[in-house]
Amino acid sequence: MRVAGTDGLPAWADIPAPSVAELKAEATATLSALMAKANAAIAPLQDAVDIDDATEAERASLTAWKKYRIALNRLDLSAAPDIAWPAYPF
Image: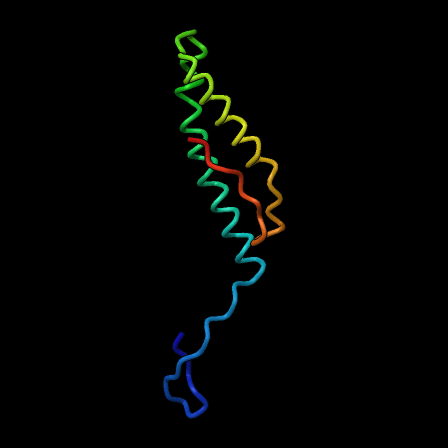
């Protein structure tokens, strides 16, 4: 990054490592985005199950997404950046 050198002129310096607070904020934002995706995937699958119109593939997909969402809920974000994010279901 560009900083003021000792002579007052522009100079290049290394970018400082992110703070613990910044790492936790990034983890929180990532978790929110992943939860939103999981919720968006679960809603129509749950609707199909609720009206008894789901295929076996949809039921399996719903179970996988719910397990993923539970795994997300159990994450310890205070461990950032060493968070073992669960595998994304497909």
